Image: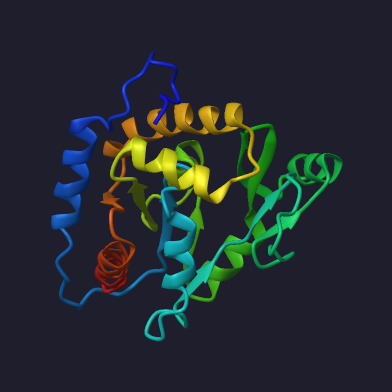
Length: 227
């Protein structure tokens, strides 16, 4: 395999970050019930290709959890991809529509990724919390920290890491066959920075096996919603 970083960066994940992932995963022990439960906001982050979107999709299909969990559907200015649906995957807006929402203060957090804007709707989050629902959001580090700042008692941060950047390179190539090589390189450079921030999350899961990672994620959800 050719080095996607042109030899300037090694294809390894920071060992301290991986250690943190394993330590936090081992912390998942189902807690006893007793206290009055509050709505939780589960913010799930990870590099493009880490498997976080697939994990969230499967999590929301779990019979025991789907009535209690609601996925926050983000706004985005990027074009719709094949198979995506308006309102299910994203709300697709023009840059002008996005700017109007931002100026009207209807957005909790937003970020720009590879030239496109992504955001979380304030009204949607507030409405779900008022109903006593638990929310699942897929956000980058900046968005995760913003949600934690706004809802410190409700927010649980979960990072999904690939087993290695080399594995991530293969996943992205397989998933994005029409994506330009330079864009894949950009994604990998960003992925390395994201992985280095994993230690700032409450939990970190190394997604080497999707089924095992899903089980660990479900344990985290059960533990935190039992509080």
